[in-house]
Structure formats: structure tokens, C-alpha cells
Image (cartoon, rainbow, N blue to C red; front, side, top):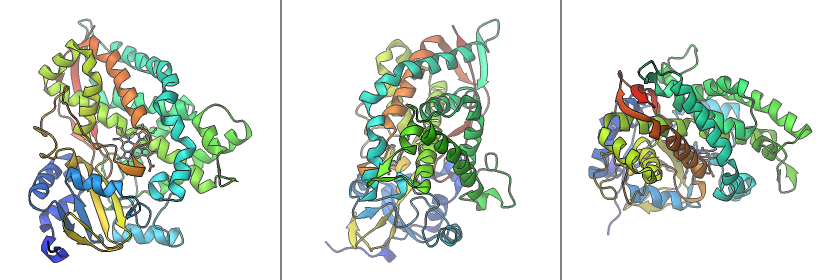
Length: 433
Ligand code: HEM
């Protein structure tokens, strides 16, 4: 079979532009683009002004195939998230030639990546998480009690589910695990929203640059680092059982973990640990509000809750994209990929792939099998996946038996971002017992 050349596989300009356009991820246009790409150019080349050319993987099988080969497709050789040439250059100038502002697990490859991942891996595995179940259930119960307190004389609650529930519950869980005091949670929430929402006019930090031109907010990363530096110093002097103490006192090759790497570790756990889970939680509630039949199914059979959790993660796919860089000439889906080529993995497209999912654009609480790939695959497979699923399961176990007559009570909205996005507004109305 002859190998196709790049020229043959250029993605039509309108679709390539959409892939780089934060509002398209909020208004659903991205799903039309993904559908077209899967059918017509499943592994094509996007050329967009101001951005280095990149391949786009939209099929489930290709995303897994690339993610699985961690030596052939690196995370750290270029930016692991989509950035403009201008932002890339700025980072390289600031960081002495490195394309990264941080050095998290996401930015590393072997041999460093497995060493750093091992520091906390056991901590995030189910046997270790089991001891957190009671603590998380107490947070879920308190969250539900707070919602119930909003009910009027007829037991009706009207609220913005994102603001009142979905944002705070996973935030509180991850911050208590990390050992961040509750009084600092609003600050952590704001910083995370500013980090992932740098391109969203409503979420971005005030600055001279228009939001649509922003991809990385340097000030936000500096604020995060300053905050965690103080925590780190404290845990070195006074270690406790929390995750911050584990990270602060870690050793790599016999040496204490460096400042940059410790700060990066805190930031990835703090940010990846709640925004994604909030989005999947809100995405589930939104889907249920529009589908009373699905809500009735899961209420009638609570053993479906784990399957509701998987379906809501597939449905929302909060991490929309990550980038990889080829370390050698190779072929993917019959296309010739050159060493150094940049590749976008479109998880939300893989999760709607017609070849893997029956009726992919429908939301079914009892979908089986559900081979959703929202947590990625291979060496970088989400470290927090078991925690995320456990948090959501516990919240639904506490909340769903008490609600009925759930419906939308206004117009919901999604945040605008190419990297991580999800519902930012979800006005709902329901009855609470
Ligand atoms: C629904 C919730 C979540 C989703 C959809 C999600 C998604 C992802 C994805 C797509 C990756 C990259 C995987 C890859 O490159 O193959 C990732 C990595 C990661 N996630 Fe999550 N995540 C979620 C929740 C969490 C939570 C709760 C935590 C932690 C407390 C967490 C911590 C991490 C870390 C540390 C990594 C980097 C792993 C590595 O590079 O080795 N995530 N996540």
C-alpha cells in the first residue's frame, strides 16, 4: 500500500480553523467538525495561521494507537497542549529554550516520567482511595444538605448547578486531600478557572490582551506557584499525612524533588483534580435534566450509577485535546508522519466514534460496553481516574434518591476552551425530598 503524503491530507480550512477556535468548543460546532473529519479525513493535517501545522487524530482507534506508543510519540518535545507560535516563542524566551512553563507529569517522558509518576501512583489507586470513601461521602452529604436548604415551602430548588454544586464538591475533595485549608478554596477555584478559561471572556483574568488571543496566562501560573511554595515549605518543616507532604518530601534519584517539579506536581493535581470532575458532574446533570426517562432509569436502579458516571465522562469529555510529538518517521492510519511532527488527539471525537459507540450522540445511563477514552491511554493514563469516578458515584448515591421533576430553568452555557472545557452555567429546577 502506498503511503499518502501531507499534501493529499490537508484538512479543509474551515474545519482546521474550527479546531483552534475556543467558542467552537462551547457552541457545539466542534462536534460537526469531528463528525466530518472522522468520515472524510480521520488523520489529516491542519494548517492554521499563527499555529505550527499539526496532524489531527479523530478516530478512537488512532487516538489509542498513538497514546499507547509513548516512545514514538512524546509529550515533552513540544508543547503538550495546542499553543500559538507567539505563545510558544514567549514561553521559550522565558524558560531558556524549553517549550514548557511547568514540568508536570504531562510534560515528561521516560525515563523521568515513570519516576515522578511512581511518587504518588499508589496513593491514587483504589486500595488506597478506599480509606477516603467516608471522608468523601461526608463532603457529598454536606453538599446535598446545602442544596436541600435552598428548597422553598414546596420542596422546589432552583439553582445554577455549576455554581452551587459541581464546582465546589470536587474542589473541596481534592483540596482536603492535598491539605489546602478550606478558607483558600475560593482562591484555588478562581486560579483554576483563570488557567483553563484563559480564552473565555467570562472566566479569563482581566488583562490588556483580548481573551480570544490568550492561551496561557503567565500571571496565573506565578500565583499558583507562590501559593504552593508556601505550602511546600510548611510541609517540609511539619510533615503530615496529606498529599502535599508526600510531594514536598519526595526524592528523585536520591535527591529532594526540585522546586519547579514540586510546584508543577501541586498545580497539576490541584487543577486536573477538580475542573474535569466538575465538568463531568455538571454534564451528567444537564443530560439528565433534558432526559427524564434516563433519570427515571437510574433512580429505579441505583446499580446503574457507575455506568451513569462512565457515560457522563464520555458525554462531556472535559479534556478535549492533548498534543504529542513524533520522535521518528512513522506512519499513522496510512499517513506518513515525520520526526518532530505535532499531533492533536481529539478525545471528544474518539468518544463519539460511530465505529465504537452505538448511537454515539445519545446519552444512555446504561450504555454497555462503554469504551470511553476521556482519561487518555498509555503511560499518561489519568492518574486521578479512580478518584474522579469515586467522587461522582458517591455524589449521585447521595443526591439522586432525593430529587425528582428535574428540568432546565434557563439556558445553560459551556466554557470556551480548546484544552479543558465544560458547563459553566446550568440553571435547573427540581424537587427535593
Ligand atoms: C472526569 C475527570 C477527569 C478527566 C476526564 C481526566 C482526564 C485526563 C486526561 C485526558 C489525561 C491525559 C491522559 C493521556 O495523556 O493519556 C489526564 C492525566 C492526568 N490526570 Fe486526569 N482527568 C480527570 C480527573 C483527574 C483527577 C480527579 C485527578 C487528580 C486528583 C487527575 C490527575 C491527573 C494527572 C496527575 C494526570 C497526568 C498523568 C501522567 O501524565 O502520567 N485527573 N487526565
